[in-house]
Amino acid sequence: MFGQTTLGAGSVSSSASRVFRYEVVGLRQNSESDKNKFSIRNSGSIFITVPYSRMNEEMQRISRLGGKIVKIEPLSAAE
Image (cartoon, rainbow, N blue to C red):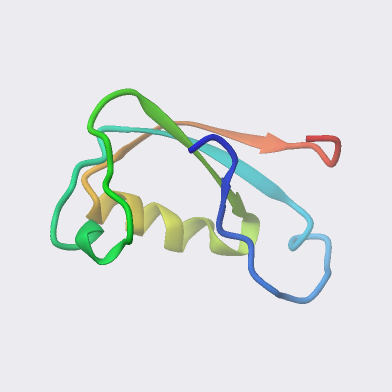
């Protein structure tokens, strides 16, 4: 799951070029995650890469899935 991304097609601006990585623990399988085509492991942490414009939306999704964000770090263009 390392490097999972939720980047979409958007306009190119200074905020659109800012990308953050969430480290998430505690995701569990539930009715919301059953809509996915894959199951979620309940162990370990996963990393989700999110553009600045979708940070709030992704935090809400993680919360619905029962996860806890333990770290948010900005990614540089080199990563």
